[in-house]
Image (cartoon, rainbow, N blue to C red; front, side, top):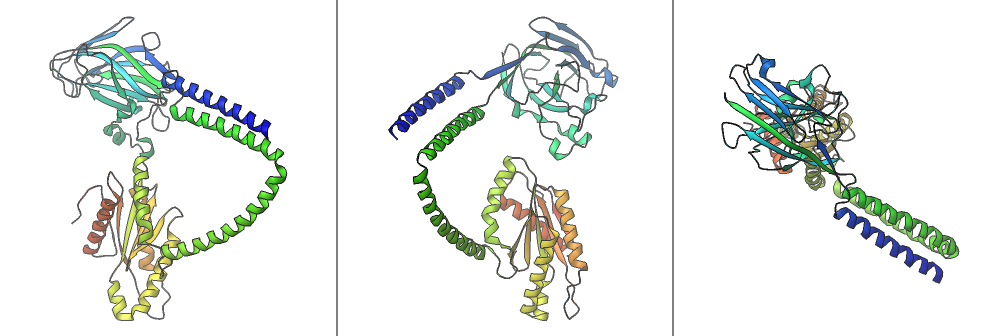
Length: 441
């Protein structure tokens, strides 16, 4: 045991020194990397409004340290402009992966008739899911606009500040999962005159473009160091287990007895938790159960930019069911309704009784269109179902649907509640949709 403890102290000392040295190396910038765009590793050309039958004229001067674009904009094309197009590779399909870089530095001098006028910077990404080599406009526009001024020096922008142009998303019918900024295959960089120009002389002098990143991120380094500690600890535990086999065996027997006792306690706690979280009539989740969960899932969904939708259901004229047939019959209707809906929804959906004859379905990773399809299946099934009662009985429901945007869970609930209210006002047995912060009347 004494020898083992001595070795353990030496190993721990080594790990501490190595961890401090590795993290210090990272803090001092040892992992930083740069990608500098120059005329030696890329090709430059002019793009202007001549493709729109414009009359703009432009010249491009390329030197070792900078590139100068001069153009005279003529108000003949619908959108007069000129720009520097930088091809990073010979093939549009095979660009450069810049996804590991976190920011870009731009040193641009911009001469224009107006002080503070902005230039547009596009990082064009190729992805075969939406782009093709025969259409240059099909490459994704990751864009920023800023005012470079003259002699302002290098200005650094985080890559997450770039936004995909909305007109490009709409024109190319881009799906939601491909509409976010993307830097994994950048083949072209474009620097263009501003959105609002007039007939005049313009000059864009590109002094420097540099991308900043780290060949290993801080989180990856921490994970590697943690893995080293874990592997070392596992090896030490194995050695110690061999040496102390008999003692461990006795401990395991004792642990088994404790584990059995804990399992019994755990099973009992699950039973009590199930009773507390389940609606006693319909045997589905109750409102109290999903309230806290909804707040957490809302935050996580917005943080990860994942779609999330909600369906609010109200049984039409249910009070008259209770008044006509009695509350016992009404309870049986609620039970059969809940069982029917549970069979219609997906495993990932969360179904709960909100109160009385109101029910709610939360649909993670689901956009508005899919949620409306689910709601329509439920509405039609309920309206046409043979409920199997010994008396003639029909049931319909009204539904409100909304997709989460930049809002709180309470705001989402209020919107979908307003959509449900509109469905009821419009005659019931129908679906109404709430788009973002639209106020339904």
